[in-house]
View 1 (cartoon, rainbow, N blue to C red):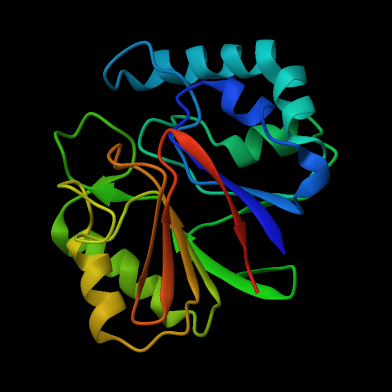
View 2: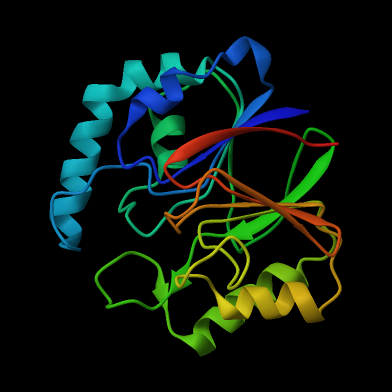
Length: 214
């Protein structure tokens, strides 16, 4: 399966529009899709991002080319891209990643979450260490999955300073069968790919990478 992985576009649709959708099987969008007008004024952001989506809907739909979309929300997303695609009748499959369970697509099992380590309490989904550990545990407790999809990077892997220690520790010290991990959040040295202990990691913050998943 050939996927286009993009993250942290922050409303830059030119990156999506540059993808030849005839050469991919699906999109993986790992958060921070929408623009912001404030630093965390929730209702203002919800209204602004909703209006932006409505204005850009046809452009977004054309760029995605009716391909299946696997999405997780980022800390700058005060509305859910997956919900908006479904609510406004996007013609392709929409699969939303969350800590609440595993999804199945393309013969693979997918798991993950959309939270980030605490920064300043301004953005969606910021968690303190104990709450983040609970979320990561919840993802693992659903059982075996092939692909991990998060907004945040695991600390120390394709990350400069914003990655998640709870996620990195779980990947290092707990059993799992993840062959691929897709994320963004950290806007440095991109595009990025790294293999650690048999798992392939991809940070596509502010860009798009084409990846073969076997």
